[in-house]
Length: 189
Image: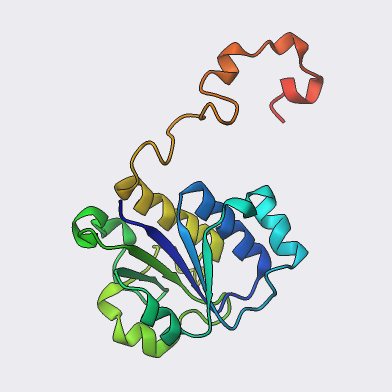
């Protein structure tokens, strides 16, 4: 199976990285963090965002882009407001061709370094938005891209279409006795 990877180039906001950590666990993806980081990995905000999924996270930290590139090879997709293609056009199965897939995202305030983008312009993608915003939130972009890649590459025994039995189970709602719930749960809160 091809490994899906999320690469955060100089992430700054711990809550975004925590949310991305949770998404990586949910989509069975590895997270790569490229320094400098705008936080420490033991920050409470980071752990709060990742909730109790931190123990399942596969991640690695790198000193620089060059350090990361020297240790990883595969299909790279750079997500940037300067991309000329939509990620919906990526044929992950065909283009990955049994290589690992790397979804690369930049710092919240500055994005990916311009020289990296220029060297990889054919692999730059933009999530389409209106002309009222520069881009979507980093963790939202990562979730969108993880879904697209996972839908194409992950076997169905890795990601589940229905609630797995290891959680509440496929027929939780059908088997639920509503009369035994308190008010807030009956109202769907």
